[in-house]
Image 1 (cartoon, rainbow, N blue to C red):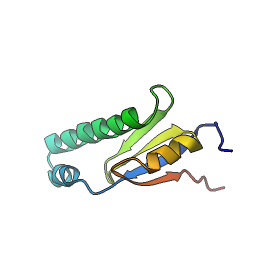
Image 2: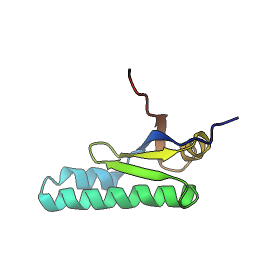
Image 3: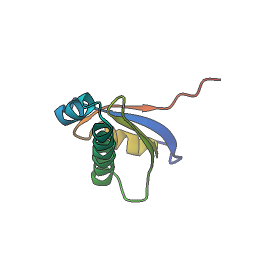
Image 4: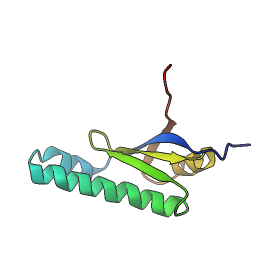
Length: 95
């Protein structure tokens, strides 16, 4: 039985030509547009895959198309099968 305890997971997305186009723009405006686009894209994926209020996205990663989110094991399984998702990995803390 999967744990209902929320843990931090990293979610990495498949190739996205819009992400690549925006990332290539090294201006301040380009960086802002990339931040806005990724935040929207990641929020949209979570909203259509998981129940509202059942997760906590902690950050969007700009250097790679990904984000960190606090979710349960069951929710991680749902995200793994979502369109556009490449990898979902639980955070591994080193001692």
